[in-house]
Length: 217
Image 1 (tube, helix red, strand yellow):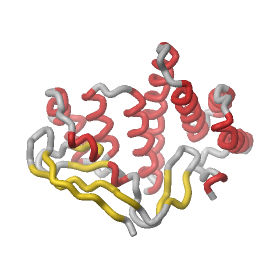
Image 2 (cartoon, one colour):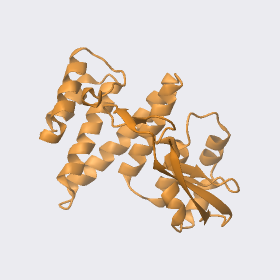
Image 3 (spheres, rainbow, N blue to C red):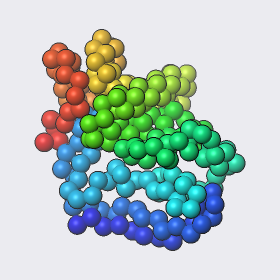
Image 4 (spheres, rainbow, N blue to C red):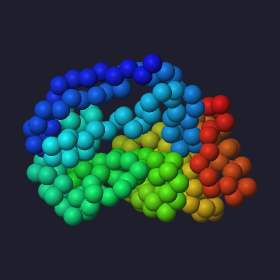
């Protein structure tokens, strides 16, 4: 059974009362993709990460509803790009979250995962052009994150390797085979050995589809 933990909170933008619904447990995780998308029995745990205020349309991760926001956030929500997204037929709310994250200046990695997750749901609906658009946006942000990690002496090696691996996966999905191979060669860690092997095999076959990790089956 999928269980939730509900708490009374308030929107940090308009201060309206909101019921924050946070996932407590699922019926069990059953698999994950090569890009770390997880699958569970019952409700999709990824969609449940975010929430929108019914009053002002502030859209964020549930946990971020507990944090104060700067004036940059309502300014972002008043912009044409945010308002246009609200009115558009979209596969998920993750692109809205990405705009909020950019306004908060939370860094490229946070934006990258928003766009990556947006690509999952666009792909689920067969919206190939939208899926590709979000993959390109995720790619741009992961590259910015990797560049920042290279310039920082405090960057964790595990984080750098994961970002590099994610760039390999995204380049494979975009049929950029040589770039994908180049990134994979940089992921020299036992932690990623099985995933890297699977990626090289898919590149050899020029397979650009989203695939399950064999170790998750």
